[in-house]
Length: 209
Image 1 (cartoon, rainbow, N blue to C red):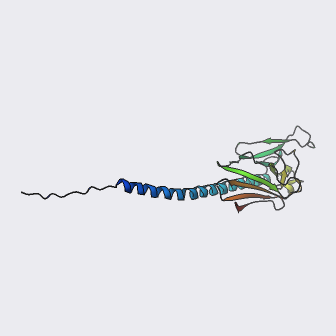
Image 2 (spheres, rainbow, N blue to C red):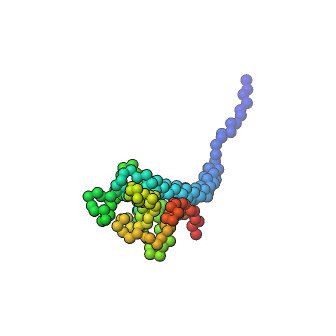
Image 3 (cartoon, rainbow, N blue to C red):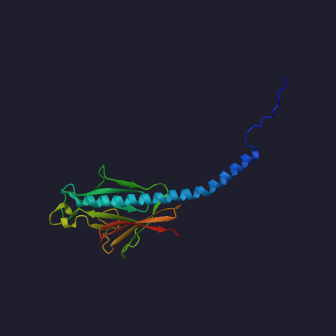
């Protein structure tokens, strides 16, 4: 009995074929990764800008419905050197004469705060006024109207202060504050716009040159 011998061709890739495939994958990754990385940073800038805007909205909403008669309002301080923004409740110290206007600046558990994602920074802060056109730090204060019937009409109104204290100088000649948020790898930046006259907080997108 005779058996025919057949050669079985072994499957697989040659070394040259593997090198070609790896090279193609490397070129493809080099093309795709920068675009993905840029998209990721653009997304993070937009997300953080929305979170900061929501923080301002929260402060304004709380000032319209103060929890107690001692509530003066709510404050958020924005600084170019700090990546954490906390909504703080401002109350009146009942043990100090009212004409002194002593405010207690305290963070209450449960109030929201925003921490910028890694790689994101506050690029600059600008105001529409001439006194402090580009401060390094600014406080946005949402007045609760002292919770008094005579002053309650002021509830929800916005005030600007040039530092992190309500004892610092109020920026009275500015009606608009813009906070610019960007990433070094992002092709866009977002500005959070606080308009005192319109009592509004909005976002705007700009392309980075």
